[in-house]
Length: 345
Image 1 (cartoon, rainbow, N blue to C red):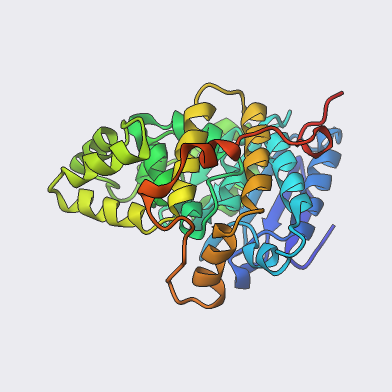
Image 2: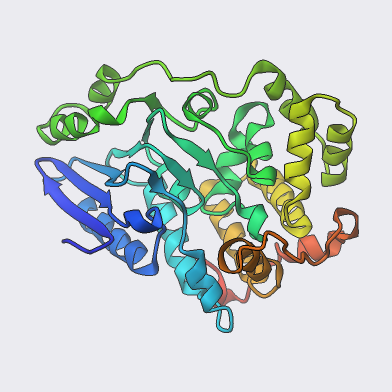
């Protein structure tokens, strides 16, 4: 099956997925998500397909996330179905019964993370730039962020989720996000060898190399662990304010530029997600989604970042100290039974 934005191919024993929307940095459309979901379901019962490999035709990006402009343009009638299909696809990837291999290089953010980092094998190239920048547009780190981020060591995931901080190849490996560091020049060979029946793990190991660059240094990692061990947003901010290192100031400035409501939601989301199973996290995230799309910060964040590009969002509330606990917790309330991600059986 060939589409303009995502291509599918059976190559030997491999089901190959090529993200092919390069001009939009492989931002995921609802059509791409539906097509991929259907193809994964078909390959699940295809005995000829022994493994699924997902990669990109773009040198710049694996996937920069979901098509948030589409969501913004439909704000009068929020496209909940877009996220429902995406979240159910994330669940299918997490539980996929065959080896699910992501070969990543370049930008991988938001929805692109959900597409790739829940599978069994995650190989990252030297140009990999991982980020969950959703709090910067009044959203929250979804697509399984509630499961993935709090399980990263040293509070690194909390830092990423609250600030949108970026990680390179070395940090992805060190944090456990990636299973292998492999240069993209080897991706075609890996695909061919697995297609010919070679064991995926053995193949990936052959082409593994040490990460390029050092990533975050020891001082930065120590600052992240100390600051983001705080039990509340206000405590995290206070800890960063008490530090004199340039990285601490940079982190504080980055966090304070985010939607105050989104940062509070993200911290609560990760506190809860740390103890949840994957599907429970996705159920929680869908509840947050439905509540957040009824507010204003997401649309304001997209306007300021993507539409008008003035970089001056009018967050509501605008101050971190004005975010009420009740307002945060309201985003986690159950939905009507027919609206839940997983409906009662």
